[in-house]
Amino acid sequence: MLRWSLAFFLVALLAAVFGFTDVAAGAAWAAKVLFFVFLACFVVSFVTGLFRVRRRRLVVRVRTHGPPAR
Image (cartoon, rainbow, N blue to C red; front, side, top):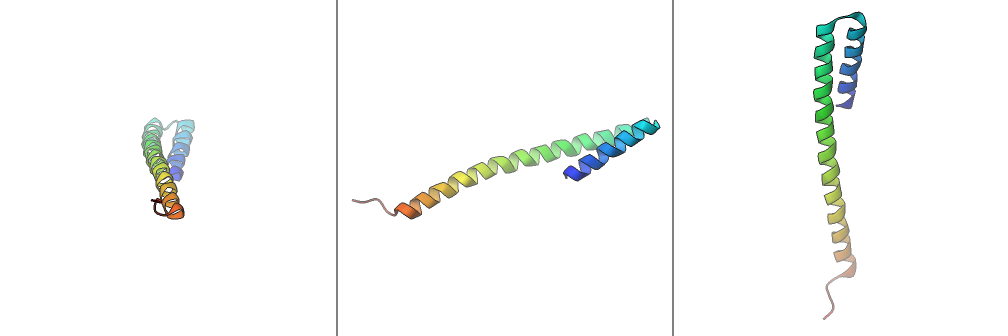
């Protein structure tokens, strides 16, 4: 996904250099959309990764300590 946003960014730069304003605007818009999609996917995966680590630590503690003593 990041490669696509980088590719559209490069197309926008090349189009801007050669003066194709419509192509540059379209490629820049696509690069922005793909960047924000990538950013949202990163945030979601980061947050779910934090919850998985906490859950995994809790499961390890329960397994290693066993049932509570009476």
